[in-house]
Image (cartoon, rainbow, N blue to C red; front, side, top):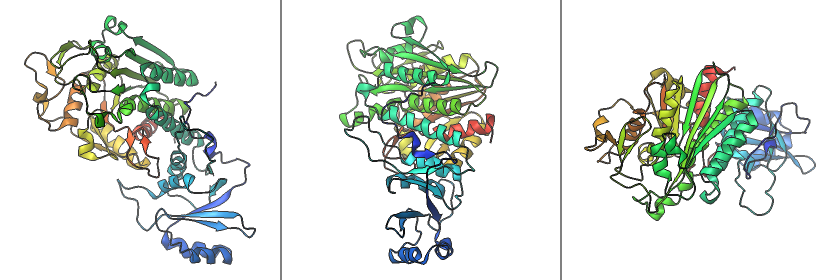
Length: 477
């Protein structure tokens, strides 16, 4: 089946199969304590060169080894002295720096990485470049021959999944509306033999998705409910729900101009669930996968929903609109109610839901909420293992009354500014009553600055952590 991806995707040959016939140069990952021993194994001229240039194997520092003919013989990457700690950047992930530092050509790991799979994934993610709107050809990137100890299929699935998600987020809103988001879901489904259905525009009212319709009706680009399914009917049911707000003006509670600059990423939840879906389907995890994306633009026109409106949700509970800029939880409420009707074994939501999440944990940690301790621990452990950092936040709190309304069953926001991320999670959980286990990820969808695992720009926060969790639950080693 033909593989489909948006323009801008990093080259698929960035990672070579272990049996690739292409000649490769050695790449050593070295800590300061092991440097002298390595130097003793190198030709004297190369060892002298490394001493001359002052290579000390400090973290993130690299050096090139000249060959006798004046060409490049190999390279070294310093890992530094520090041991890997939970929440820190693992040394194996530092290979992600090299695709943009080393000369073109093919390389292989000449030393053992503590986590060879993470080293390979980091190389693929570090070489990501979004060039859909750039003129001219990109400079070639160096390639890494995969170590024989890693699962090549899984590494490629992870890198390709994250690449797909990043491409979707990085695409500006003029080319990434609800219809284009549906196209991306259909392309993914075609690639893997899955099915997709959608409910569009006023049909949302006929099919009882009133909150999603209300949020999206002011845009000339029709809102829609995108529903992807794959896998055995009787396999464990895993349902992923991703917020697909393709641009958020804030609605009538309009954002300032500075607040709109990154709103192309407000569909980051949808991009993330599509990234995870690719990982699951490409590695053939034995699950019954369902992906639900409520897609809309939160725009302004004469028929925009208003502060003070009361709208009945799909679940039957009425919601007073306290703020039209808290629209993500509204579209998710209808989608979650639909997902919950099927009683999935795990129901996971991903959304760029609140700025409060960033105030609490910054850009690098993703707060998540879970109603099951075992699931929460599994996610946190997996996130640390693959350097996709998450942090559990409380879902059972004394803040339920913050969503009280005098005229409806609930408000979509609280009156005060406290605990904003928690309040958002509480709101969503009210629409999940039948799923066996539930977790919500309040993601950023963006990388603030370039790091080994990727450049500044769109990011599928928690995608790798969740895939690793599911792989450990339902996959093979």
